[in-house]
Image (cartoon, rainbow, N blue to C red; front, side, top):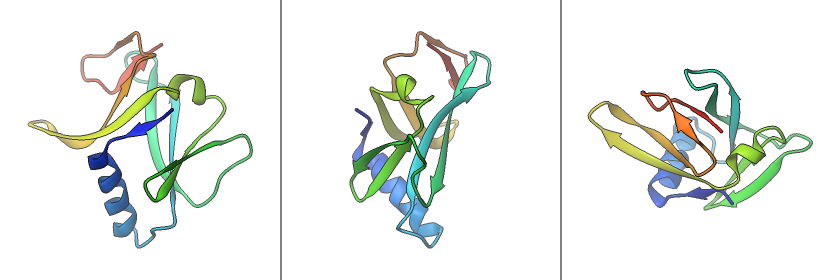
Length: 107
């Protein structure tokens, strides 16, 4: 189950509105990279692809591909504002460690 906090859901919808599109889906994925080996990616997409898992969320869908799903099954997406800036924060119970800057993880 992918959970999205109310603050993150609102920021996602604001970003869609800024694009002039409220009909988009949010794709979250995992790819190799970063100091710890894996990193997250977030992009808007118009439609699902074959093999995607789609999760309904407060007026939009979250799409996850087959490769990424095992890493993202129990995540929480939040939006945080800190001294270093503002952005989406992913809490992942499957992550066994992360780099110092928090942009990548290992599972």
